[in-house]
Image (cartoon, rainbow, N blue to C red; front, top):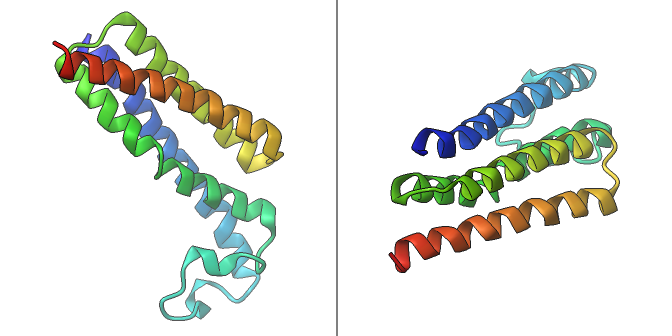
Length: 142
């Protein structure tokens, strides 16, 4: 069951890298219209591009940042369950989390209507909460 529990985490890592490539593939052409990355101010950050390049391009960056935030809790929880003993329900919740996060990414990067995005975030967070409770149960109440 360890491998089954780790597979969703691996897929989310791969998805995060896909979002990184998508972000770069949309930002770099936009930056070239502004003179290229060589003209970036020293110490410049991605946030500096807000209001400079179109919002629809920045949405990919926003989502990539989100994939570096809450999923860190997911990775720790998955590792805990993989080591302590995951069950079939844990694996299903982990796949649910990953599937919803991928849909969330696609929505945020393309349509980005907040009510739907929030619903997707809430659903994925519910999966994560269930996983965290399960991890607490198997580690604190063996």
